[in-house]
Image (tube, rainbow, N blue to C red; front, side):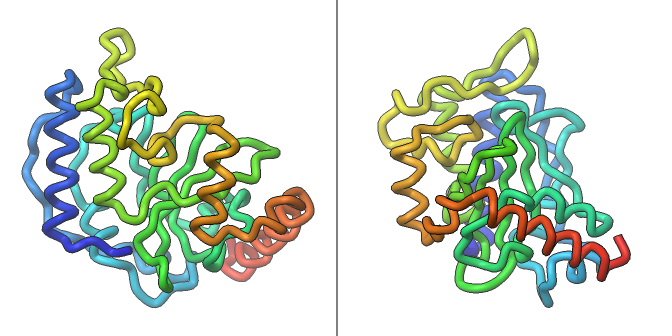
Length: 230
């Protein structure tokens, strides 16, 4: 879903404060107004609008370092069709595979922002693995995701590592009230994964025949890239 902008601003600010309090070097640089995506973004993802929640987040000034849990970073606006290559594991999703923007990249997990339709604003996650069919919703919205990470810091399962200077995720399952799927850890418990996939509308028949459907998706990605001249 799409967040009220006040709710999103508050959630991101609270996460920054929690991360800085934990030890991360993340000074307050003030808020930047929502910008506009490059025109090519509409063509790449086949949409006619981009939500203010996303343009606002992409406009904020963040340090040139990993500020998200588990070595995560916010991906810039894509410049060309090669961005679609990140969606090669997006099989069985209850929305068109193309209508999601790669947003957060972690060590072994990719998070995307759904750009259109009834699920606009949802955050979906994919394990970066050649044989993992784990498309699943990580959070119902951006604010919900940042709130989970903030609560993870407060619960002591997202901790600052003095040596690496990163926020690292420890045993999320040990903290009551937190959603393990909101945190960029992999692999995740298969029972929890499959239950959440069914809950959020993933086509489980497609998941069970993952390799075949991924081959079809990769062909579709190549076709779109060719149409874009990428």
